[in-house]
Length: 107
Image 1 (cartoon, rainbow, N blue to C red):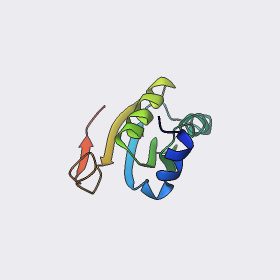
Image 2: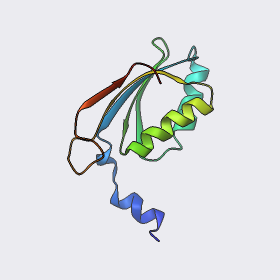
Image 3: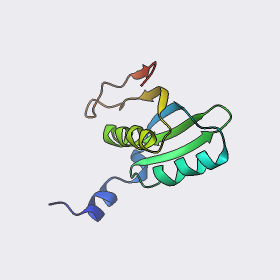
Image 4: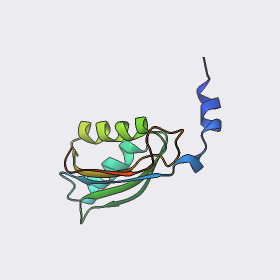
């Protein structure tokens, strides 16, 4: 069994290279922004770049497809489901995708 602290050292923050942008439902004020920040801060392997209350959007970096799924699930759980979503798949052939951008009209 691999110890968690070891994994954290092996996957440094420089691997947070894939970018995602999501349009979020019910984001109307700073209280919602702080709720999202507090809850997403618990997810490892993501870094929030910006939460725009005016546009109802969030921009973040993620390291793995699993981290991306965690963000989607957590936003839905706390009452801020994703309306539309743009994300970038891994750039290298060793990753989970073939290095192209993907866009979902609605989630």
